Length: 154
Length: 167
Image (tube, rainbow over all chains, first blue to last red):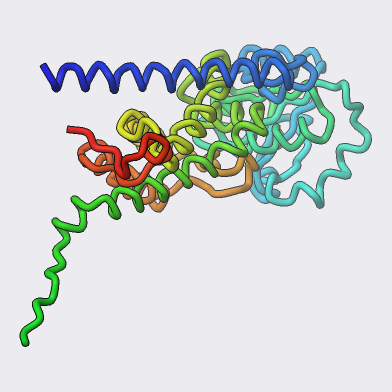
């Protein structure tokens, strides 16, 4: 009986802590306009797109593709019309962005599902003022596998 | 005249309030510090969660809304000795989940930043060292769940006794 009472006491404490965290979290994000309450413009949640969406943006020329891989990987092969901004050398390469208006849609990709430089570069681009950043999750591997336009040609 | 030197054993140390107090302070401080950047950079933390490629953006936003505060409250409660067992249970559950998450990301070959103490994408990459750190902290958390004497606490100082005891 004693154990049961203590367990209920601990359970009650756990419920109090979790409830307080929810209340504090929602109140804080509501006041500071973050998370669920942030303006979409300021919300750095990068949209992940699949191959179909990436193809649509590529062929309609509505987006600029950015390759976040190393320069030598880019030179070995990349998506047609993509520009290279290696994540590790972002500061040296970011002058390439000067000609691109901030309102443009940028599609960032890296090797494929196992790399993460596209996400990290996407976050840096977002923080640089590009609010329409998309992450092409399948990346170079998926694009190449589907025999889509590449440089050099497939 | 013969003097008896007091015997020191690990078992007696582990059952002492000093050991629980040390564990409480270490674990509490780690969670308190870890929560600060996550609270200040909610959107960065959402991106860090999404990097693990396990959950979608809605659930990631929900997690980023309440998890840092849970870390903060549990950390503060452990340091102050308020609800020590409940805080230890919650912290151990979180550490267990974080360890599984990091291990699964490593198995999948993801090269991502941990998002543990800083939301800067280039800070603190995940690795086996992170799993080892988590397991050490998890051991402290599990010890605090089973310990009976939590040592000095704010609530008990206010009530006049010295230690918080569970049975």
